[in-house]
Length: 401
Ligand SMILES: Nc1nc2c(ncn2[C@@H]2O[C@H](COP(=O)(O)OP(=O)(O)O)[C@@H](O)[C@H]2O)c(=O)[nH]1
Ligand SMILES: [Mg+2]
Image 1 (cartoon, rainbow, N blue to C red):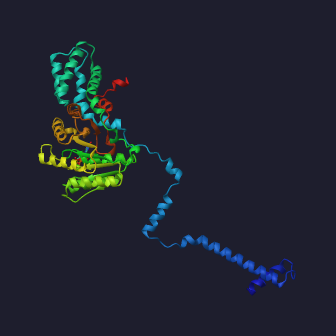
Image 2: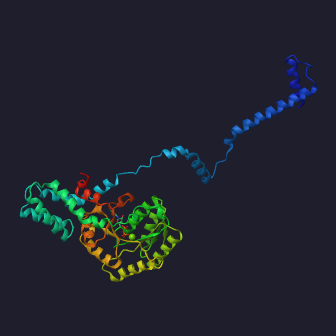
Image 3: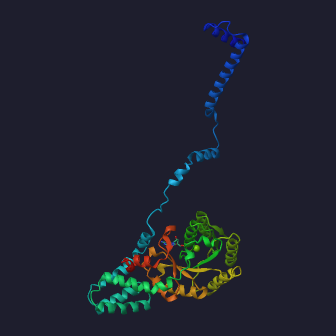
């Protein structure tokens, strides 16, 4: 301190104010100068602080990276949320490619604007049988076409439009019975748990379809509880768990070999307790010819009624399009035991038999609710009759012309 006072006094004498300041002033100025120097050193120290940070642990550094990487809120808003890949119409058209090219597309070549002869009619009949639209629709169609072809000027394009209208008329009365709650979550009905029971033979695509469906519904803001009632195979439960984890749906699962009816009941109970919007039940695959297994399914369905008389609200049969003719037998048996509300037609992309939907709908009077044309979430959508026929026949809906 004495040294500092000396420095300040010599500074004063250097600028010619010797004796102008008394001893007290010199002390005051010296203290102020000291404080100033300390503050300056302190500031310098703070500037260097980041260099002194010790290496952080993994978790701390991750947290820091996360904080730094968080974009400004405006940037989040700017991110486009476009669906990736092809549109649903494109997927449907691609998916039905085999059926269109190998079966339905060939029909048009029979029509060249001239009246049909015996050979052409036989060829037509053969192709229609191959298309699996069923004997009833085939006979009706041939009779109607014969009449049309007599009038002349009935070429391939006219035939396609005629076919569209014919099949549309056959299916639309049944299709109009599809419950829109199945694919469009109505927030006005929030908490009114709808139970959807999904049944079918092994490998038809039940679990995959439920995964897709749960994802679609949760994306709309619905709360979904999924019951893994296929307790025969642990792998099936794990497969479903992956879908649920991804979609944010809750899952009720039991140990391998547990009573499937019990799992269904528990899942529905949980859905009711939590006021979920949907409760979707995955059941074990079974052959429609196994009477005891079909009875077990009926029991599982009836157990749900203990919680609500009206449950399940939808019982849907998953049908693999490849099944062709046998699909009708499956559908008949499942319908007899469970009174189906709808069908889900899967794997239309891997088969030329997508036309068999026509026969089943017509004969059973049960509508198709969904159609699947691939393994991804975007490959399942509501069955729209106009879209389906347009894609199958490669013709625009006549109603749009
Ligand atoms: N190509 C194609 N494959 C499908 C479709 N739906 C399901 N799959 C596949 O079919 C196989 C059996 O499906 P899964 O859901 O396990 O049948 P489950 O036994 O009825 O539950 C799986 O490999 C699925 O990825 C579809 O629409 N198209
Ligand atoms: Mg399964």
